[in-house]
Image 1 (cartoon, rainbow, N blue to C red):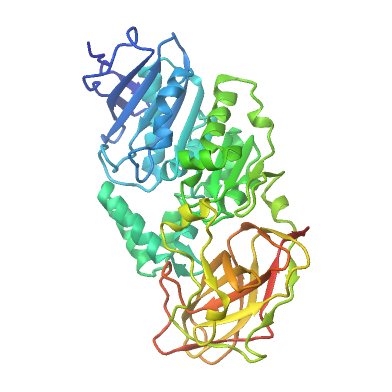
Image 2 (cartoon, helix red, strand yellow):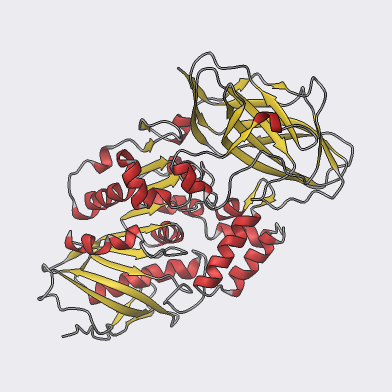
Length: 519
């Protein structure tokens, strides 16, 4: 016989009523199954209907509560959703729901903004009123979009004591605009998935359109800031929230380094695990099989058990930063992100243009490339970095600087930095810098890359560029060289270079600095 939840009213933190809808027929009574599962509609304070699945342990409560906001796009086999019944059997009340505007829920997408934050609080209040959940033990567990929602919500609701956030963005503007350059492919991809998977609010659609159209206004930055967990770090610290995060080195949406810099700003219990792959790879079943030493979902549940169930499992005693380099198998630990990056030192680089300043035709692509999006992340998790041949990279499509062959292994840990002097025949333009690991045969594997867009310069007048590339953890083998490559564009970014303009790079004023350990 179907279990029917009564339609009750609970009070949200601000005093607004939060309504509970009826359970969808087909769920099983708790006495007949180890865990009761019900599909429920939760009506939040502005009247939006939120579709949720509720899992309740068979044993009498109260039980710790885990709320799980869904991702932007849910695959048929979502590893987090597969864990919900197991979490309930472990002793949690679990409420997994589709965020507003996505899939079964009503309303429109708020992009982890104030409405999404308020929804989390309302779902918590609903669970406390309708399930045997313990108001003193509340956690959030989510991936991707839901992870950003969770971090923002925890900062606004002191009832949340613990968060497990897998591959969250921490700075939304930086996810879509890099060094003044629009991440065109990513913006279009995310907007398309959002449109297919739900309903974008006018504000969200306008923000996507502004970023996609190259508009960098105070309004767009304010919109993104209100949706960025780094904005609310002080509140997380004030609450003492226990935060576990996971990220990937080749995430096209969250540049490596975003999550690490947030880690260092947190003062409560905290951990970050970094591994190879693209957005969401670390929480997949495949990642756990390929890299069992860095099984993120398993550790996320241990983190929750430590702080919500009180299990002394040692999850909180591991170092704050644990990582696996992209091309090495050993797990590394550090007391923080800055400690991992260390101090950068200059690398002597020699231009391959025989001392002449290489001149590029702006807007043209070369054989240097960021990799096929979005499959590049999956390839990276398999140890396959985007690869090219160094002899193919020549002016007017590419400028190249190389180091001497390494006398011993070199472990790069941190954000490579390029300094150069550029002269453009136009007042605006875009170029992309790549850092490669090159073997004796000239096969070049991509370590990191970043775009750069300049505007408002005087045509024909040289200007200095200081460009930081996303963080990477990469081991350069003995005998290999580093190659710094610059070209006029990449399929992942939307450039602004006028047709026919040229970019000239000073061969002698181009510098590279990296943080590395020798041996």
